[in-house]
Every structure is written in C-alpha cells, then in structure tokens.
Amino acid sequence: MGEDIYGTAITMLWVSLCPEHIFYYEVVVMGEFWNTLRENLIFVLCCAGIAAGLVILAKIAERFLPATRHTSKTRRICIIAICSAIAAVLHILDFPLVFLAPEFYKLDFSELPVMLCGFYLGPSAAVACEGVKIILKLLLKGTSTAFVGDFANFAVGCSLVLPAVILYHTKKTRASALWGLVTGTVFLTVFGSMFNAVYLLPKFAQLYGMPLDSIIAMGGKINGSIHSLQSFVLLAVAPLNLIKGTTISVLTLLLYKKVARPLFGK
Image 1 (spheres, rainbow, N blue to C red):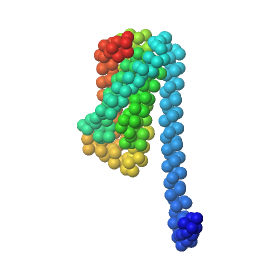
Image 2 (tube, rainbow, N blue to C red):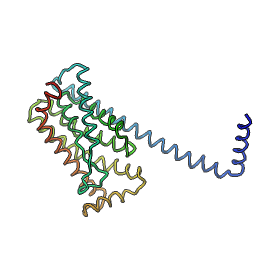
Image 3 (spheres, one colour):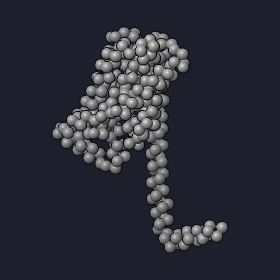
Image 4 (tube, helix red, strand yellow):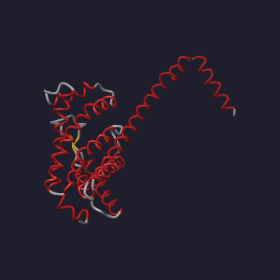
C-alpha cells in the first residue's frame, strides 16, 4: 500500500514538472500507436478478404466444371497436407536471381506440389493447399517481411495455380492442361507485376523505412534500363514471374502423370 502511494506521488510530481512529456505521450506516441494499429487491421482485413474471394472463386468454378474427383474427406485432407508440406519445404529453399532483380526477390518452386494437388482434386483444394503451405512456412521459418511477402506469395501463387487448374478440369486432357498452364503463367506475370507496382513495392518501402526510389535504384544497379517504378516492374519483376510460371508449367507437364499414382494412389 505504501509503495502504491509512493508511486502515485512520483507520477503526479513528474506530470506537474514535465507537462510537455505528457502531451508528447498522449498526442504523438498514442497517435503513432493508433495509426499502426489501423494500418495493421486494414492489412489483415485485406488479406482475409482476398483469401475469402479466392476460396469463393474456386467454389464457384467447381460448380461449372465437370465433376471433380470424388475422394473421402480423410483422403482429401491427407493429400492436401502432403502437398502442403512438400510445398512449404520448397518455399523455404527459395533463392534470389541477383542478375535479374534485387536479392529480396526470390524464386521458389513451391507452386509445383500445389499445382499437382489442384490437378488431382480441383480448384478449392489448390487454394487450401496454397494457404496451408504459407501457414507451415511461417511455423517453420517465421517471417522477415511482417507477413507482407507471405501474403504476396499466397496471392500471386493462386494467380498461377487457379487458372491452370480450372482450365485443366474442363476436359482433363493434355491440351487443356497445356492451355491452362500457359494461361496461369500469363496471369502470374501480369497480376504479379501489377500487384508489385500498386501494393507490394510501396509496402516494402514503408516497412523498411526507405524511399521507393532507393529500391528502384537497386534494380538500376542490376539493369541500367531500370529508372522508374514502371521499368522496375517490367524489367525485373515480370521476367522473374515469367521464369517461375514457365518452370512450374514445364515440371507439371513432365511430372503429373508420373507422380499421380505413387503420390495420390491413382
């Protein structure tokens, strides 16, 4: 009790002697706190909204597709879990292409098992696999980008996988798989580039407290033709997405029929 009275007296004395400190705390510090809280809430709601939209899109697509593969709920969960685990490991083993883009842009092949899962089970399973992959990666490695890069990987990954899986399931032929993978690669390249220009690059600049021009300058050191946000996205981000989409597509065509039986029990 005596300690409480003593602490209160000290606080009142500090307030009376240093009113400007209280003003700074209430106006500046609390203002920054509420701004940060608001920005984080907006980010979380944005992530949740896009994730929900992708799930709904996958469910709607399945209504208009020929019947997808019927499996038991337990087997479906097991297949998604296996593919997600493999994808998470591949995601952790990412690597930069420093001759093409700054080193914080990294290439990984984690969409390959997600694509195989989607080809086997359908669009909604692909979105679920992509989401579980990100959760597993966060549990194993954490985040170095305040979840911005992880959300980007999920959204951009779905832009590749969903169109490919939906078009493949229209007929389930090699031709439909090829057209689906080409379409998915185009979606990945276009959407990934626009997403970087509109949201990711400005968010990274804000996250690391550096001007956007500094990030563009990093790209300029790699390619002298990069001198603006548009040229950065066109000459660094788009080629990286194109390489990823093309590689995943080729590997899917080569591996799906060969791994379907041992991996899925087809």
